[in-house]
Image (cartoon, rainbow, N blue to C red; front, side, top):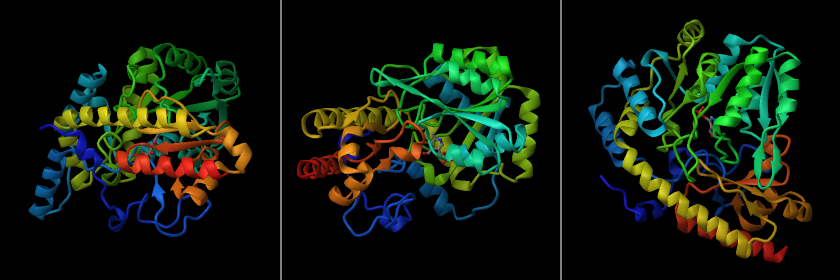
Length: 397
Ligand SMILES: Cc1ncc(COP(=O)(O)O)c(C=O)c1O
């Protein structure tokens, strides 16, 4: 089944379906969003319908009407394995795969199982902010290794990473590819990080939820694929939810190659009663990975078009905004420091003056100040509307 580009142009009203992005008149972080007509380009889901085979299967399952308990059998994990093998050249053994209700619940379960209250956990900022909450909220110590921004892309600060590892850190949460910048960490970068983790005995939680949407030619390197040491010391967190816009279904998979660690994590998951999948999410994952490839390819082309639009438009009409080119994901990280300096708070400025709601870079921790994150996983007419509003607001500032 093919998906025409024009299908991605359709704007759906999501406000009646409890959408975090569109149903609320507030946003998670201050300031409160008030009033009608605000374009929501913040939280990381897309405004597109899922692949048609997924919709058909879920409608069929809804019509069936018997919503009893479900299992994930080996065939379920075979489908996950086949997807990663075909798309990313990584073929995890089926027995390494564990079920979870979402990537973040799995990250929390791993931290609780393998670290103690007070243990240090490293993250590299700016980064997806729930990492801060999962560390601090579970009583672990947040250790920040700030990425270095040079030549318009992020680089590792390996020296500081090693100093933090040496200071007694127990775990490292890697965002691979990186949210918010969309940077695809290379084999060499991952190998360098792993060498430090190996030297100091850190476990690695590699969150690879954004791996499937490839906007540049850079490949996705699964952390566990770089070598046996990385495979044995890591947990790879995966999900179809960003890829196929299924976040509301909630499902994830963790690959744990180390048998002893896998057994411990499985105990945490099952004694938290987190392993029985939701009736719809189980089906959604299976159909998406089995039949969603052509849709994903069409989506990727469309998102490249959206990215080109943002890049060209910013160059011509958004002075002081410098978008980075993501290798992966549907998120564009924009260096807006010149505007932020001028207007005070660039996120609040666009919300109030343009009625465009973006994520504030400050949410992403040290290094995010003066940046904004724009979600381009939306119909192009809507994106164009948002960019025009932003240009108009900037023109008046
Ligand atoms: C890097 C990253 N990890 C995890 C999540 C959330 O995953 P889940 O909904 O499966 O907990 C997000 C959502 O935006 C994300 O960007």
